[in-house]
Image (cartoon, rainbow, N blue to C red; front, side, top):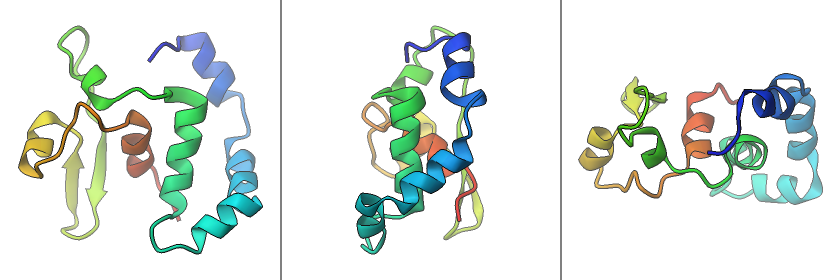
Length: 113
């Protein structure tokens, strides 16, 4: 993740993110995909975060031991509990934290209707 504080301000804080997401959701390309059972509003949010903030950064970059401890959390709707995007949780679900996008984790942690 190569963005600094000034980039975050310009790329997210000072933007009308709600309007941009609404516009993206109502675009013909996204509307067609939203009618699919394999694409939802969380996927559109993931695409936005990837494009605007995180690029292709993966979760492993957050747990490299070189900086402060960062943990992204979401709610497991099936069990009603917290899901932490940590190496331990990924080991339990036999998944690969080295390839999981930060943008998808942040989208999952956000409130999406």
